[in-house]
Length: 346
Figure (cartoon, rainbow, N blue to C red):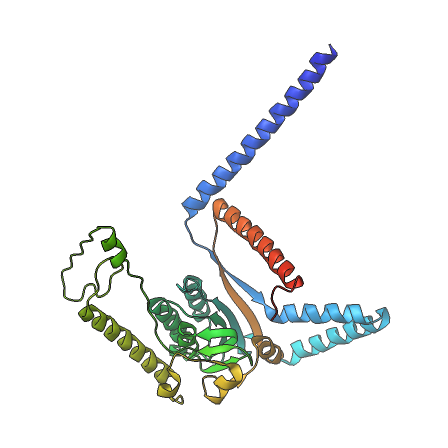
């Protein structure tokens, strides 16, 4: 009898576990299917950065002051805020700064979010407002960064001041974007420049020929294909390839010159890069400073809003991102261990 009782309890636990698993799997499938039906559309998120700075300031005062001083400070702050609300200009007349971020990869894939963020800002932005783009990119594909630069040009074309802040790097295609700004600022050791074009392609023709492998390539049009990875490249093809490379470089230089006429383009369009201070000397930027300092200076005279486009992700993507984050944390632990063992130094 006791055996039957224990067996029944065990069976109940198994059934409960199986039902729970079925429910969870069903929920995942339902969420996944719903995500597909809803498409890939996301939404715009707006964060008031003034409030964020005020919260940080208040947290520090709370930690550093004794209770009596904090209460006094808090009371004075509320009194000051009330007085400012009564005497200040109407909210619609105060300058607004919309803060955007662009973290570029070789395909400038962040442009898909940037274009939506810019469109959202342009629905309400006025001439007295400003857009601050915190830009980071080492460059990449010409056509992709050309599109990203064109998105920024939409802001200038509307007569809205555009400030570009470079905290780490804006090189090659990244600088193509940066030069659109009415005002460029960069951290002292940010990397800028690399106004040049590069292309490389492996060729396996001799390896294939060695193993008696023939490759046929047929084109209609004299220059449909200049260099190829598997066929035998010709001098005529190389000349045409270099001609296209030089033309792209010339277009890049003309683009930079158009937006920053004060530059000696021939002197800086050599593919070289410069740190912030040297970039200032060569007029690649207008001033030294970080995006953090710029926003802190503006917080008392402008309303600061971070604008982000958030993509809806399917459950599979979320699981993949979680796994990627786990691997990244593991690798970072290895890096920290190597540093601690003095395998390298910076």
